[in-house]
Structures are given as structure tokens and as C-alpha cells.
Length: 145
Image 1 (tube, rainbow, N blue to C red):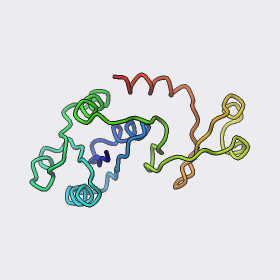
Image 2 (image 1 turned 120 degrees about the vertical axis):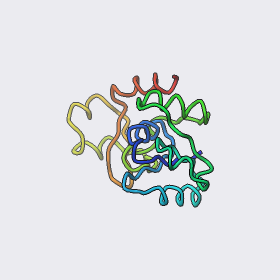
Image 3 (image 1 turned 180 degrees about the vertical axis):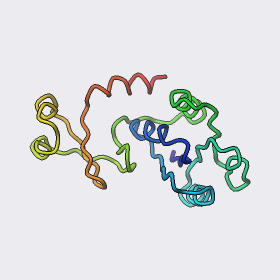
Image 4 (image 1 turned 90 degrees about the horizontal axis):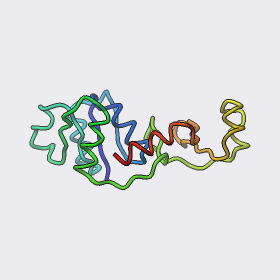
């Protein structure tokens, strides 16, 4: 399942991406652009905008009620039981991550990170490096909620 989040849901989009869910997010996109992409790419619209959710072309949508990202995620999860594959997408640009050798990241991450970790991933689009740091246990708890 693929989603598109409106400008009010940037934190939710990032959280969902970290859980491996495909979420398009561009805060500069207007309502017409969101609807167009939703229809073209078969994406469910996630919005806090009552006007957008009431538009007839926004057929596949979920109006997010809470301002708190934890509650937003619970609402999405209960409405759309989605498979989760944590840390498989870039949190910034939504691209699937690829495995990268420790030797290749040695000069790209802090020394202590390189010493403490053996697994690294990189975004092929923006080149961000990811590794299973302390945030992993927190995200593991969140996906179970």
C-alpha cells in the first residue's frame, strides 16, 4: 500500500518511511497536486485538511484526527493494516535503501559509529547513511503499538 501525506503530516510521513512504508511527502504540493498524484500513483491520501478530505476526487483518503504523531500512526495502522519492514526506506526521500559495506562508509560516519556497527545502508538517491543505532528499539516498540 502506498500513501501521500499533506503538508501537515511531515513527522508522520518520516515515521512511516522509517517503518518501511512508501509515503510520498512534499510540503510544497497543493491540494490539486496531492489529488493528482494520489490518482496517478494509486496512493491513499493522509490529511489533516478537512477541505481536502471533503473533495470528491480525494476518494481514497484518511482524515487524521490527532496532532500527535503517535496517535496519527495508531489511526493509520488501525485503518490500513500494512506490512512493516523497518529501516528499508530513506526517511528523507522515500527511496528503498541498499546495503553498503562497512569499509565504504568508514569516512562517511563518525568513528565510534563505524566501530560499534557492522550493518550499514545507503539511500541511492540522497546518499544518506543509515545504521541500527539506539533508535531501533524505540521504533520497534512503536510498530507494535
